[in-house]
Length: 363
Image 1 (cartoon, rainbow, N blue to C red):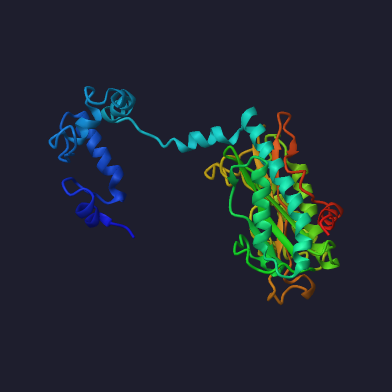
Image 2 (cartoon, rainbow, N blue to C red):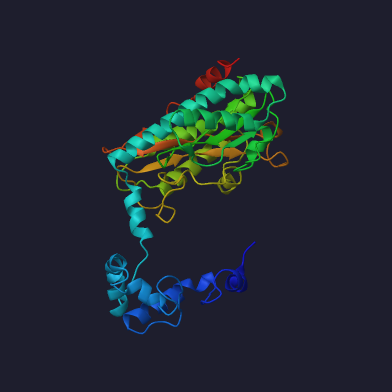
């Protein structure tokens, strides 16, 4: 429950002014302007300095708060001179886009820890499914444990463990369905190492072997993943946006080859591949969200490459053999000093043979 203005006035600050939070910028600006002009605002504050000391006086009187006064002097001068005060986030995001050597080292560790955790989770999954009473959440718990034992302080985001037809729902997070042999499981997970995130998705058969239909869809997604990673470069032209357009074209070719779409149905690709090819990665999983995805890639950027296909169970416009199958394959990619792609998450099995071997190792 929220106190609201009336509740705050009644229970928290009965002898002062209370304003709605949405008016904070205006109220604070008025206080600063009033302090600069030498006219204290009407709000008064109690406490050890006395009930008649104004808020502006407490904040800006050098005899009371010399350190704060010195720190705020540029803001006060800007207000007095009517200078424009700009948001810092666009400038900070430009700095965050390009990682330092230390940041890259931390991201390498986060990616390696997550990749190794995927290996262990894959190994456990087949045996868990064979028991017949284990839920998706078991794999989430195993992954979290394995990342933390490798130094990660927390998960980078809640694990997605989507088995069977649950995989066709983006960001499925219930993780409460029973693991069943013969199903695929799509797992999207990552750890955070000293604040820096890893973000990996792998899809694998809980039986240890892909069915022909599962394998066809998996290899289509894998082909796009690998082709887009090969296209990552700092050449002054390649961007996340251009990589996404490339992935759309490649996915369309794959779907036509599989007989799921017709050559003239390029616009329908987004129905089964409904998200971007990737995003910037760093302190946040979807890092620097205001940074343009059309800007050219430059060295020391880190991005994800994550094509996927998701076929609803009730879509009569596609062949029955692919309905209910969902596959995504996601890697974290560094643009190195030479402008080339370095896959930080290569330790997580990805080829058909490597995935099947990893799962069977737990049987």
